[in-house]
Length: 252
Image (cartoon, rainbow, N blue to C red):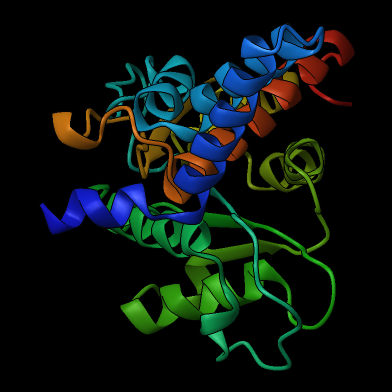
């Protein structure tokens, strides 16, 4: 009971109820903007409610709910893992707390995949980031501390977007003599990453992690709150990127 009471008193929920009340008052007084206000209330509810946010996430993740079985791939094929962002500027590779949660989840997933592949493949870590030590260097530190030998790591430290991840990883993969590769990134991000990396022209085995779409408990299914709003924001960012990449040929 207390859990649902907290949800009702969250700022996002209170804003929704206030907006809905204002819309109702406009309708009662027959003010012309009430239809526009109602459309805004419904749109806000869609992106801020668990049922709406998870529906948006599912649209992106529906083909990447789990790792795929890729025929023709072997333990010798390189693993490409994409950075998921960092916070502020870091002055040392040891400051791994600067990595965003998405970067850490992807890094540990790449490590687990490397172990499943008998610790054989090279791991290409792709991620730049503004200011200080690159995402790739921070992620590489996590990997070496986890037991990956430094000679198994190749870093791409200049990219600042998914399309740059692909464009700048391509020559590195060519130098490695790669004929195919595993791609590790968040499930929500995988559709856009696939569009970008398909421009390289090599077979890709998607390795999606950190799935976000799930069915919340029935009691809080309809209540707007901050976490669903954040999830919808991330999903809409990916949808916008997908549209742009589709129109521009992988964002190149």
